[in-house]
Structures are given as structure tokens and as C-alpha cells.
Amino acid sequence: MATLIKDIKLQDNIPNNILFEKHIEFIKEYGQDENNYEYGMTDYLRVSGMYWGLTALELMNTLPSHTLEKVAEYIKQCQDPKTGGISACVGHDPHILHTLSAIQILCIYDNLKAIDTEGVVKYVASLQLPDGSFTGDKWGEVDTRFSFCAVATLSLLKRMDAIDVNKAVDFVASCKNFDGGFGSKPLSESHAGLIYCCVGFLSITNRLDIVDRDTLAWWLCERRLHWIDGDALRIFILACQDTETGGFADRPGDIADPYHTLFGLAAMSLLGHDFVQKVNPTYCMPQHVIDRLQLKPQILT
Amino acid sequence: MHGRIKVRTTEEQKALKHKEQQKKLTAYRMGMQQILSTRKEDNYDPVSLDICTQLLSVNPDIYTLWNYRKEAILIEIEKRSVKLLMVYIAVRKNEIDGEDNIIKFLENEFRLTEQCLLANPKSYGSWHHRYWVLMNHPKPNWENEFSLCTKYSRMDDRNFHVWDFRRLLINKIGITLSEELQFSTERLNANFSNYSSWHYRSTLRNLDRESVGTELILIQNAVFTDPADSSAWFYLRWVLSNPTVTKDRRQELLDAFGQLEELEPDCKWVIMAKCWLTGSLVLSDKDYIDRRVQFYKQLAKLDPMRKGQYEDYLKAAELNASHVEDQKS
Image (tube, rainbow over all chains, first blue to last red):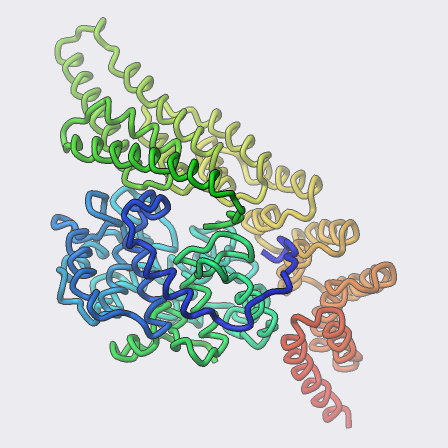
């Protein structure tokens, strides 16, 4: 939020460009060692983690094609034959977050046939409640993040007909706040991450007319990047790179991780960096994949 | 990894840390192995449930473990209803202890979630589990939860999980809207710069002629107390969007902000608010002098990071100014 201003003093030795080789090495090393502590302790995030890492590699034009089979095999093992949902790792429970990540990965590899996609459609549809909202899994937590996951997954699978889209839209619209932002549930406070999910949701469902653009843009400069100082943002992101290990951190001087590495690269792509592939802001996937799938998420012009 | 600062360590420290980490990793893997291998649909292993408690109190983000607990709770609830049914059939009143057992069993869940939330007050899994347990509890103590909620909001009054939890609770306890408004006023008076409090207030308020008046007074108090804080200004923009704010009231505010500007000439929010007010006055009164062009130029100087934004607004204001000129001539 705008009130939370933590001034960061940037160091003098900020790299003046993206350290591609370092980042590629960082992502490729990540997960090579099963006994690496950070990696081993985060198995409950695994499939989403694979999406962050593999998409980052693709944005840097270095996704190794020989990993296709291995990745597909792993995801297959994570699909629950009963519900059709996909879990973070073998032995854990299916959840919509990892279901979306799995579909995103398989779309990037153009390999949807590797799993039971009809099962995925059934799973996502089963999570919609009568008010149009979505739960993350069968235990009932409702959040607009899951509304985004649901329509992102189904649109990538071209199966939006499996849910009640109008009701889903009504629910997300009911989460809009006085400041033009969106929260996790009706009446919940606006939050940048949830605004991404809700605007993304409305972009996929072609209902960006619901966004109160001037108010929201003012709050967040969401789709109008020329409104914020692009150069200052670029320098900040470059400063988040770890020059030793590679990877990006959430802020300069913190520990780098695959999640912030993907979003750091995606931001550089949106800022127009020449050597990062064009990223689609709605799906946070390479634009050429979205084009191949002939998807045209709505954008505000 | 949010906010984890990278620290430099010596080789010796590194080796020691590595050893500790390997121990933790092995313990985690063995624990998960034990839980997942004993997981069944119709029964659970109490030893595994204890391990589950330990693993979650270290890391509440392992979502599958919360699910495992919920399964165990449902098994216990089922046992209790079978027992109650037997008691009902046999009318053996001295055996009616099923309820006590389940209440005791669920105490563990309250203890664990509270422990997890103390360590990580933003854990989605812990909050949801607590609420789920309450919803499945035969005698939920909502008052107790309400005190807990107050305690957590004291720890961090920006934590949206706590505000969401409060919203769930007030419906259960039957707190009235006017009581909540009173609460909201107190919170704002205690700290005008808490954006969450302003947001919460917006959810309680249906703007009409009367409430708009009250809100504008509250906002004026806030911005005169701390003009540099953005929260109340955001709220002002929303209140001003309401058509019941009269021309006279807008003029009064404009005059007040003029005084504030004299005290705080470098505060961009004051100038921005003057733009909103002038803009709407220009729209309703063709003779009103549009000084927004000057204001936006001032803003671009005061806040160069958002220069692009002000230049866009400036263009719109200049366009409007030339329209007005055309109509006058």
C-alpha cells in the first residue's frame, strides 16, 4: 500500500544489466541436489516452483527440450486419479494452485496430452460454489486467487464452458473496494497480489469493463507503466539480482529464489528489455505460448 | 523468500549450519513419511498426529498436513455422533461423555493454530484451519475468538487476515453496525495513518448526505493531523466521488486545504485534493476558474517519480480549459 514506504538505499555496485548466465545457472542448479536444504524443505511448493523455474528459463530462451519427458512424468505422478486435481508433490493433496502451475508448464512444453486434462476440468469445476466463488481444494477456503486459477486453467484448456462464468464474474466484482482495488473476499482490503489475480481474472473473462480504471490506476499504476518511472523501477529490479549466486531476491540484499527470479525477469520483459522474451502479463507465460494457443486475454488500451 | 536478509558467514559457521540443516531435513522427511504412510480414510494414527503437530508448528505452510488434521477431526466427530446415537438408543445417560471428548480433542487445534499464528500471523492455512474447526465445533466460543482477534490486531493492525476474521466473528456474535462504526471511529482517532482502518470504515458506510458530512469532518481531522500520510486522502477521493457532496461543501474544503497548504507547502496530497475539488467545481460551474494546470505543474515538480501521470492529467485539464474558453467566446 502507498502508506508503507520503506526507503531502500541502493548500493553503488548495481549491475547495469541482467546477469543471464548467473540466473540460468541458479535455476538449473536449483533442484539438482535433492539434499539441498531449501529445496528439500519446500516440497509442498514443488509444482509451482517448477513453473517459476521453467518459465524463467524459457523467458531467457534456455528451456532445455530434453526435460520435457521428465517433467511430464513428474506432473503425471502428482495428478490425483480420483479428483483429477494436481498436488505440489507426490503424496501431497491436490490443490488448484498447483493444478494451474502444472497446466502452465505443460502448455509451455506443448504437452497437454501427458495428463488427464478432462480430469483437471472436472476438478476445477467441482470447486465452484453456488455464489460463483472458488475454493482452493475440497476443504473450503474461498479466495479470489482461486477464481483466477480456475479461469486461467480452464482457458488454457479451452474449457471455460465447464463453469458458470457469469456467476464467477459476479463474485469477483463483489470483491471490488472503495479504492478501486480488489481483496480476497467481499469486503476484504485491497492488496497488490489480489489485484493482479482479479484483474487477470477479468482479462481472461473479457470483463475489464468492471475495473474502475482511473481509480485503480491511480492506486497502482497497473496497466499504465509510463505513469511510473520506468528507469527507477529498472534500476531497482537490477539491484535485486544476486551477483554471486544468480537469481533475483524480493529486495536488494535478500536471499534470491526462483519465484522472484521469474517475476524479476517478467517485469524486465514488460519494461521492454530486448533479450528477455515477451511475457504475457495476464498469464505470466511467454507470449509465443499464448499466441500458439490463440488466446487473446483482454487488455486496457 | 520475503525479507530474508543474506548474511555473510565463515566456513566454520557454514559447516555447522549445514549439519544442523541436514538433521532438520531428515527429520522432516521421516515425519512426512510416517504421516503419509499411516494415512487412511477411516482411521488415523495418534502418533502421526503428534508428529503432524510438531511439523506444522515449525512450518504452517505445509497445506497437506492441515488437511490430514481435518480428516482426523472428522473421524473423531463421527465417533462422537455414533456414541451419542448409541446413548440415545440405550438411554444410558452416564455414558454421555462424547461431547466432552471432542471438545478436549479440539483444544489441541486451538492451541496449535494459535502457536502457528504467533510465529506467523499471516499464515493462510492456520487461519483457515482455526475457522474450519470453529465451524465444526459443537460449542464454539465466539467471544473467546473475538478477544483473540483483538489481541492479534494489537500486534499488527495492518494484517488483513485479522480484519477478515473480525468480519466473520461479528456476524456470529451479533455486533451491530453502529457498534462497529463506533469501533472504527475509535481506531481511526487512535491512528489516522492506518489504511486498513479506513478500508474497514468504507465497508461499513453507505454514503448519503448525512454520512458524507460526518466522514468529511473525520477526514479533515486526519489530514490536518498528518498531511503527509496518504490513507485519509485515499478515503477523501472516495467520499468526494459521491454526488451528495454539495458545491458549498466543496468550496469550504477548498478553502480549508488552502490554509493547510500554507502550513505544508511541499505536501503533494493537499495539491492533489485541490485538483479533485477544483475539477468538480469547474464541471458544475462554467465561470469557475480552472487552476488545475498550475496545480499539476506543481505536482510534477514535487513528485517527479509520477511525472508521467501528472502530465496525462495536465493534458486533460488543458483540453477542458480550452473548451471552456471556446464556450465563453
